[in-house]
Amino acid sequence: MTAEQVDVVVIGMGPGGEHVAGRLAEAGLSVVGVDQRLVGGECPYFGCVPTKMMVRAAGLIAEGRRVPGLAGESSVQADWREVARRIREQATDNWDDKVAVRRFTDTGGTFLRGRATLTGKNEVLVTGPDGAEHRLTARRAIVVNTGTEPVVPPIPGLAGTPYWTNRDAVALELLPSSVAILGGGAIGVEFAQVFARFGVEVTVVEAHPRLLALEEPEAGELLAKVLETEGVAVRTGAKVTGVRHNDKDGFVLDLDGSTVGADKLLVATGRRTDLAGLGVGALGLDERARSLDVDERLRVTDGVWAVGDITGKGAFTHTSMYQADVVIRDVLGQDGPPADYRAMPRVTFTDPEVGAVGITEAQARERGITVRTGRTELSASSRGWIHGPGNEGLIKVVEDADRGVLVGATAMGPAGGEILGALAVAVHGEVPVERLQSMIYAYPTFHRAISTALADLS
Ligand SMILES: Cc1cc2nc3c(=O)[nH]c(=O)nc-3n(C[C@H](O)[C@H](O)[C@H](O)COP(=O)(O)OP(=O)(O)OC[C@H]3O[C@@H](n4cnc5c(N)ncnc54)[C@H](O)[C@@H]3O)c2cc1C
Ligand SMILES: NC(=O)c1ccc[n+]([C@@H]2O[C@H](COP(=O)([O-])OP(=O)(O)OC[C@H]3O[C@@H](n4cnc5c(N)ncnc54)[C@H](O)[C@@H]3O)[C@@H](O)[C@H]2O)c1
Image (tube, rainbow, N blue to C red; front, side, top):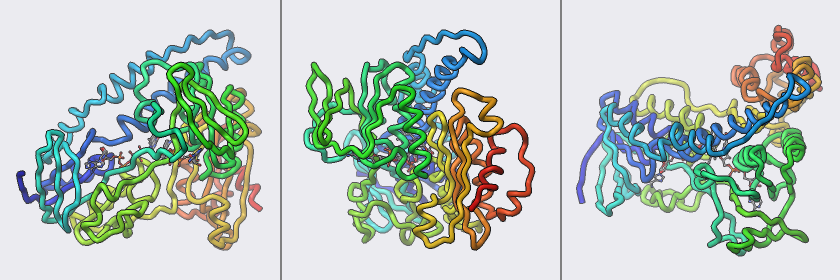
């Protein structure tokens, strides 16, 4: 056992943790960053980056197939090996983080590979891969950024089968002929469309009545239609009562009154934190909670901060990075705005992309807000009509009518995530709806449809 006193210990080097650790080290503090897996966390190795490389490849295939009728003839020969190679070589360096470790240690920080547990108010125990133990005492700050693990629901028969999570699915060298995807949230639908566009027979099985259950109902409903047009079987409102697997036949999912069979099963039913494993009990906190309670400066308790998925404020890389900046300022005693999640943006990278910011109509009504909504179909806009195949989408705006400002919006379409930028500014800046209605929107852009949605407010 070794023991060391430092200024800052960062537990978990996800996007936010890596950012905090690097910046505080650059500021001259002695910083130890600890990660049990890879510096950079889920996003670059198992999440955003490899999946968006898949999405890019699948988008090219779809666009190639849209050539006939618009630009001539096309013949697309999809080859997954190109995607697998790009993910292995360019995105993940074969799941090796030496570049990221160097990036951090070049700032002056020290990296420890191992599993960290909180053992006291300012104490952390790190157990290395070889079992060696290091006791760290943090004089100034402990920053927790341990993220989440995939949830595997307690469905009879599922445990012990060779199901995949996102961590397996990003590393596929070959695609199977069929996949069942349990969960129609962001992970489920992104993988579903990618796999289907590469010729895999895909069934999405979602317990909720709609895909993307957390977003506006119109978005999930339209996405289901698009996926079905592309050959994906979408089973919403489905209760899986059992899972069976054998090497010859693959997987069978028992639903109420029917079955779904597939060679492989991807489980994408959400994420969970592991507060007990992290040892938050040592800080007097509830180990059974779903997330760490943080204040507007991301403080958990005296001397302890948290960033990222573990705070439950939106499991996105941009949340983690945003919170990291708040923590850096707070630890360094600098002034700056507190965390404000009113204009939380998120984008599901299907085609059409589903971008959303702020709250949905249902959430606004639950909060007792006097709501007006406006909507328009993107395919009916000038640009949507010009675009032709692949023009599905919509803009929906949610107004707090008493204050005359938008509190939420959805931009679904070929560039839904980019259109969202304008709506995010409107929600974040509380730009009066009257002012939004009187501005000039370039013709013929997709974002011009925002003015149609605003004109529809009632
Ligand atoms: C398939 C998929 C696609 C996604 N796509 C997007 C996207 O397009 N856009 C987007 O914004 N977000 C996306 N996300 C979400 C995004 O990956 C996370 O929100 C992001 O990684 C931020 O997480 P985090 O900062 O909480 O930490 P994480 O990235 O989860 O990292 C936590 C780190 O802590 C380490 N750790 C955990 N426990 C310990 C311990 N006790 N001791 C030491 N180390 C520990 C882990 O090894 C890990 O490296 C996606 C996620 C998935 C799974
Ligand atoms: N583009 C992005 O930003 C992006 C992409 C992927 C993931 N993520 C992040 O990762 C998080 C996790 O993604 P996710 O898709 O796993 O979670 P999710 O919470 O978004 O969706 C999980 C879905 O699984 C369903 N489900 C749960 N149990 C089920 C069961 N037994 N049978 C059938 N369906 C079941 C839920 O109803 C839900 O719709 C997201 O919330 C998001 O924050 C972001």
